[in-house]
Length: 256
Image (cartoon, rainbow, N blue to C red; front, side, top):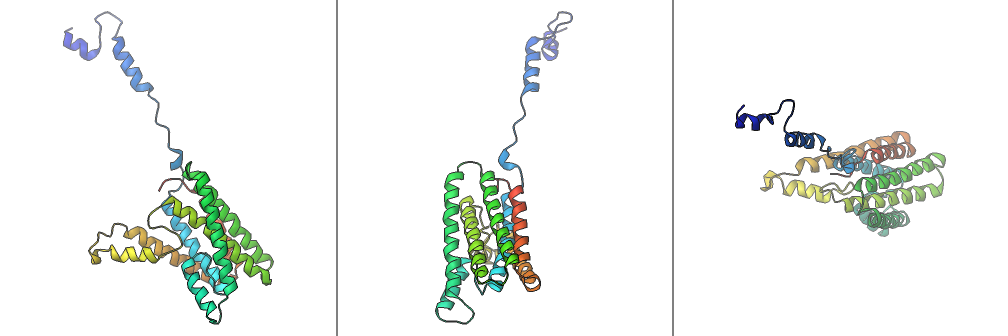
């Protein structure tokens, strides 16, 4: 056998023996451990999770505006405007209800910020899931209150406070997660970006699908929430919202 053939086959020239170095190279190739899966990647990506939460926001604001005397508990921009209406004496609006919503939303946002400081440097997946679980529990508790005491005077304030706190907690978390164009509660800048970055405006429309999906999600949530409030009262839509968020708390991953 020629030296060239020996090099190709790894034969040492001795009967029954092969090149040990070739065997070592083969063993090294076959024994390399497979890369471990990223634990942050397990579950549903954050983008669809936030789109689902946008649906929930529309649903929650339908409950609060239609069932809690014209107060928003997710959309604080609208609440500031409503507070102005109420302060001017416009009928159908309440200063105390609106201030309750604004105040508890801010407290929830502070809590969300504190959680972000504590958990934000670790697993995004764990952080997102814990916050979503807290929101699901809060909205579920609001549903129980609405079912148990639908006509009590304190129920309105309780529902406003609990849902606004939950939305503040979530908004702070979403802001810290920093997924572009998916704030889950505010669409003003989303709509602005959709128009100003469109091809008609000379842009590339790169983020148009995500922005359009966000608008549709909010609209769908508001439509569903309004229908449920008008036909089934407040407890059922709150229960639906809690159920959706609870499922997301189990499925969310830590990647966009």
